[in-house]
Length: 158
Image (cartoon, rainbow, N blue to C red; front, side, top):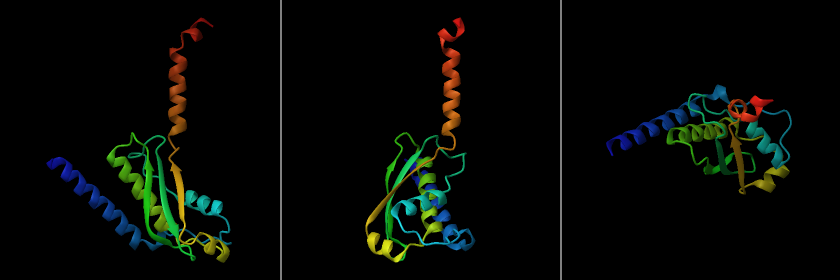
């Protein structure tokens, strides 16, 4: 019981520290686009390219996380973003690391430079974006394929 309370306190301190750093670090803001964004697909593409997954030391192969949020007519996040899905097999530490990465993305990349027409169309409506950490997935698939090939008895007879 004491260990779980300590773990929760440490996690909260880490989350608070990251948010405090993100709020005070103006130099880490995304560069403004040359042209305003005019489609929802472009909004999601811009956010995906702005997302920086957590360091590999706390990353999980194939981790998926989905966040739902709304924006104002001017491209600012409206209210609080909500995590609607996380990979089931992820540990609490991995979940927190990915949540921090997603919230940092929203702070770093908003307000979005959107057209007036798109702002009028999506203002206040929920948007969802699914982010998948595929950095280590290809490597893991290659290792798994090699292991399968090494164990294949038919391969030895050829």
